[in-house]
Image (cartoon, rainbow, N blue to C red):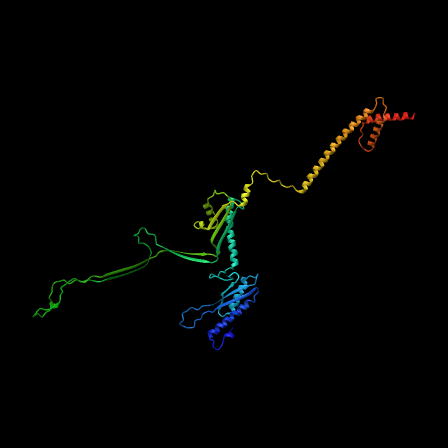
Length: 420
């Protein structure tokens, strides 16, 4: 820029400006070499110098500002801001590190700056996070107090405010008059007193008139002896100045940064209980959130109403049977198997009794077929054979042992008769 604009017709002031513009562009290009920096714009304000001995204007220091645009996903940290400040402070003559301000183009907040008290100012992201933490803390206090009366999950609280990050020092001097016994009491500590006085005399009245002489008189005298001349007045002037000491109270107060100002609170309660007055609820919320009672009506809103879920829950009858708990699948299988086994045992018992009853009926029928003379019929032989077969198969015989012995003896006699 200097080579393109400086010429034979350029003044020294113009050449200085061209040099400054070229320095600003060069510093912006150097900052663009930093990791994560996409673009940087540098503005330098030169300091004023005292050129004349009688010039009473104060000398101003040089200052600079930098607006940095970061790449997507990159943040302008305090470390990077400090590096940019050091670069500019060492590149500009008479530049102090503390007179350089670095701004993030995305958040429009100063990064790594210091206030007048020397406290490092946080970034916009840090202030937002700290504000959110303070708001959550106040909301938790209000919710914890209200849930003791309305139950868990029935209270929703929202807190909004502005976090003041400035450090404030106040000094107050209060003057009061000393205590007096009454209005005529003049006692006190006299600091200063001045008095002044002036007095002049006066003369009495005497002969007067125009001086002259009678005819043929050698000695002049006053011819008019009327005595009407007035005497001179007396003048007197006195003054006094008294300064009394007053009672004074000097107070210094320091307010640290991080105070939440302009706090507003919104509360919603899921209930239709109106036993507690709205004014009492607002006062309770104000004390929990640190809001004065004078500002509470304008900064706190409390609404009590039943939600849709609570209305549906209240519509269900209280006497409705509770839903049975579902049993696990292995237990259901075991219960089914046990029931099936019990049914099988009952069925076997019934079949066994029916079988015994049928066997008893068959035995009675066989006994009725045996004649009194001891002869065995063919049907009896068949019954004995069937009974023997049943024995051989391992089943219970239909006849008792005595009946079987009698039938066996008759069978042996029948075989002997056939041989003869």
